[in-house]
Image (cartoon, rainbow, N blue to C red; front, top):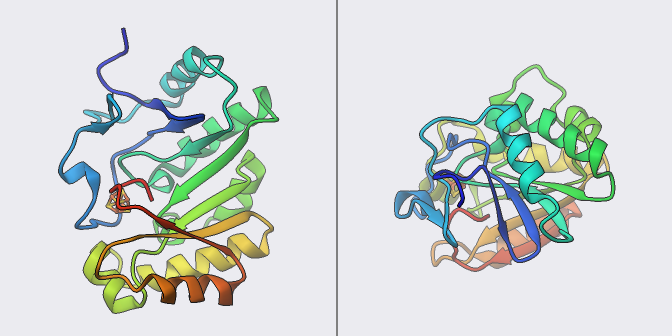
Length: 207
Ligand code: SF4
């Protein structure tokens, strides 16, 4: 029987890590406003798991099948717990070096972790890919949809994309297909920044 709150969960052949429910955005469409989890997993956390708890949970599930990748993505922004993210990623990389590690992020890591070399630390921990959600075709739309706590969140997310790209991480911009967003303009942005783009069906929170 699974525990009542899930730090580790899976969808198809990807293993996901739900390390926090904190987020510096408050997207109006966010799944956590409406549901306590997804696919039978409970992602609403009464408290944040420790690194040790996450690793114990990983040990239980990592041999369940041949996972395509591990992904930091849950009901919150993983870089709000950067040290936890880095430690767990290091553990995965050390014990399962052939398993790729991706970070799904709102791109606010520079604002959440000032004065740190976030990109360098992510790379050193073994994170190889980042999917950055830019849910707005310009700053005004972004602020209306995502309602960030930071005033310069949109610009900082774009800086995060550029820095990750320059550090040779595998970068993609994602955006959910909701009526307020002109997807083609975000696609153009990704093209100008020379990173990949992926439009996502409206499955809130999974950006
Ligand atoms: S959709 Fe993602 S970025 Fe937006 S509030 Fe939810 S967890 Fe944060």
